[in-house]
Length: 70
Image (cartoon, rainbow, N blue to C red):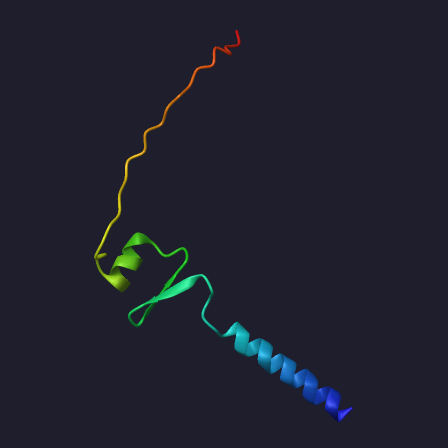
């Protein structure tokens, strides 16, 4: 009976430790933690301005296959 109690308490302790860890959808920016769902303002406040920004343009082509319904 005592062994069962120790196993149960150990399992509860392990589960509590996993519950206190950082979320897996977050990353560190210096000493700050940026979470999924943070606003642009919050990220800029925690990390500062980005050192590089990628941008591109997309061209969308609309094709008409002559399948008009009236």
